[in-house]
Amino acid sequence: MNAPKGKFTQLLNDWRTGQGQALSELTPLVYEELRRLAHRYMRGERGSHTLQATAVVHEAFLRLIQSEVPMQDRTHFFALASRLMRRVLVDHARNRSRGKRSGNVHLVPLEEAPPIKIETSFDIVDLDHGLDQLEQLEPRLAQTLELHYFGELTYDQIALAMKCSAATVHRDIRLARAWLLDFLMGYRV
Image (cartoon, rainbow, N blue to C red; front, side):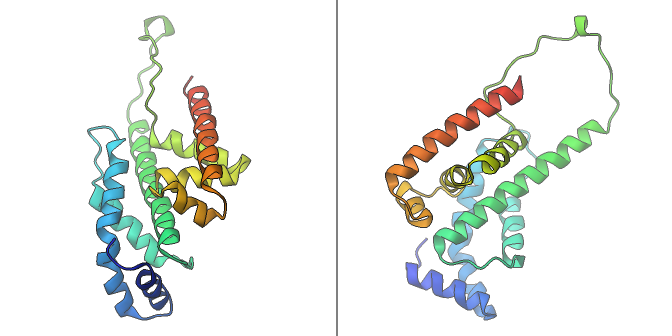
């Protein structure tokens, strides 16, 4: 991100007030950062994943420019973009699962079934469900975790956005991760 902080915010404001040229100037400033984030998210997916990072960026950016959510600054912009990329990945995973379920199902007697292995990696849909559950219980913890992992914001950036200390962010992330892992392990069994 090479644009000065003030210029980025000014471009956001100009774009939101209907100045089309601002979006043209803003796009190259955010595109590479969004691609980097998308590549990071895609690393956690299985190798045969059919969705490309570029498609994730394009879909999220399209949803972002069509949204009516006012964006205050760079941090808020990337937090929203991260959330939208998460939604794109989850939507894709859910659609993929629907396709798998629509085929022929072969029932196997329990005694012939292979043993169940508990995995330590989690599907994006499971992770999304866990984050949604955490958000219902502790919205601040869920938002902090999302900003850190999906938005790749530093503790200081999150503290500024959430109006708290970096120590609080660190504690919230540790607590949220522990809660989410516990939820996901219980969810898998």
